[in-house]
Image (cartoon, rainbow over all chains, first blue to last red; front, side, top):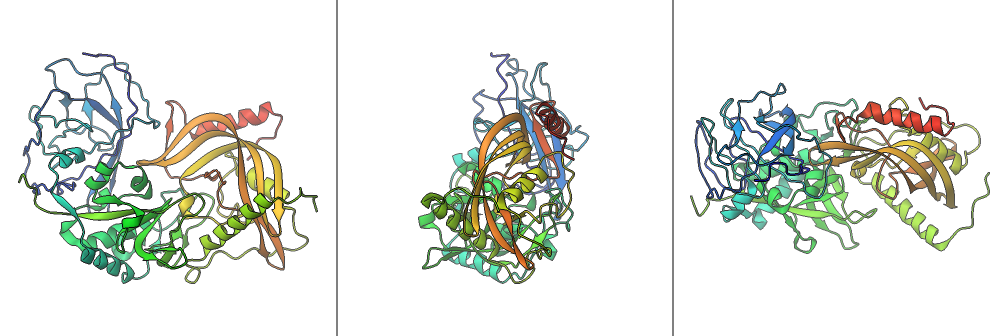
Length: 328
Length: 196
């Protein structure tokens, strides 16, 4: 057993949805009462331990929460010891997995070996189960049992989601175009003073707008709470598997159709279609967030040209809706 | 006015592209809430290299933040560009090539941190480095006259403005405070005044 493996740089996005539905493209029946265990893959023993720290939990308007933590790799545990999972003890409310041996290094900072993990919990104190990516599901340990699904596991039971139909795409675009004007704000995320995000009142940024249009147009078939909303950075950086776990599939430009989500650099909208003169029109909530040196700027919600500019090209993403898994 | 280097075809094309890009950046939603009005300008136009120097000087990371700080020297602010930020310590202007009302300004910049918008929010990596970067500039109407302004991020795809309510720092032990201390240290070592 390699007890002193070099720490791997891991930057994790951890979505913790308290009492919420499973936020995965893989269909999993909504859980109502923990504990509940649904092993999806055999435990081959190739498990991986990680430690979460520096957790920040944000509660969104819909009551869901999103927890972002640093995830540290550390040496494999002794055979048979299993991970030690505690109740949430992080003062900020995030999940904590203890048991890291001394010498663990804080090595956050990016790198080519980034790994993204999702943690889903059901009810306060129900415990957490951290699943590596890639890797087999960990069996439940001690009294802490939960049902958690990583996206690569969903991939293993492929067939539980599908791309939206052309009609659904059209409905999504129609919703966006008829949603009215939004007030652009990031709620001060960039360090400036501006109104708080309020989706119901149409206060948000470009990805708030696209998330809202998607969930309003697709309804419960697209089970992705606000806590799992993708930022433009997420759209660019997440792997295809992770994207699908968050409800979108990357689509080539040649295959894009109206109603897809179009993202270029730090802006996003709902794809309207191309123009004869080379424009790539999207319908977007346009504006600029407040920063320490500049005020918020709110422009009309409407058509925006996402064509190549300044070295940035548009990317397209198609929502995935849930269907029953073949294995269920 | 300064004597500017001879125009080159490449720079002309680049400037034209830059102008088009800037125009586009402002165009899609001009009606509802227009961009801030230019402040009234009295007197002669300030040369582009001076405006470029003002822009870089204001961007030094130890300057106090202030809404509107860059309004006289910068435009084409673009939400799409909010991806990568450098913490500026010092700069040296290398050239400013103008073509009509467009320009490409080049500077050697010393930075103390690189901040990017990652999957989980802003992350800053501390580290002193020197790069050469280019900015587009435009000579835009400002009251009764025109004013040269830097347009958007560096052509190397980074900005120099402070962004982010929360920034996570790497490596361990680094922080905004240590980055600003590095800025001061660099400026002292180079015999420059501290920027506040």
